[in-house]
Image (cartoon, rainbow, N blue to C red; front, side, top):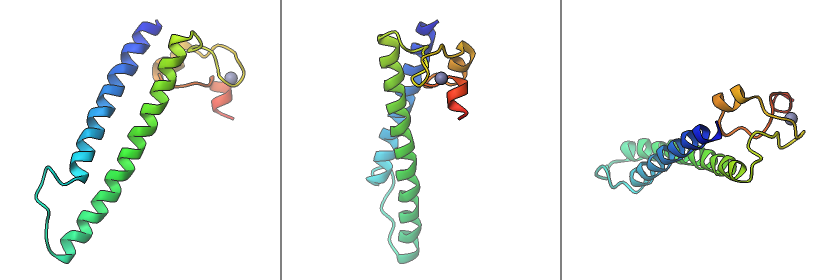
Length: 107
Ligand SMILES: [Zn+2]
């Protein structure tokens, strides 16, 4: 069952990495001509902040996915990193990058 999770995590990671590539392109203004004029620049600057936020969120998720993949490799994927008990398989299916059992996560 961890094989299925690994595929799911790798697919998600690939998706996030291509999203980050797109974000970086956008931030570098490669995909659209740089707009001129004060008002447009303000809008464009706000947009960059949003993109930065999205990039950061994607990077965080990639970090969590890498951790989950590591846990699969060393056989601790289904074990709660806090209390050491088994994580409910249904929970791992719903949240594949989870490292905590439902009890520890809700604390
Ligand atoms: Zn726990």
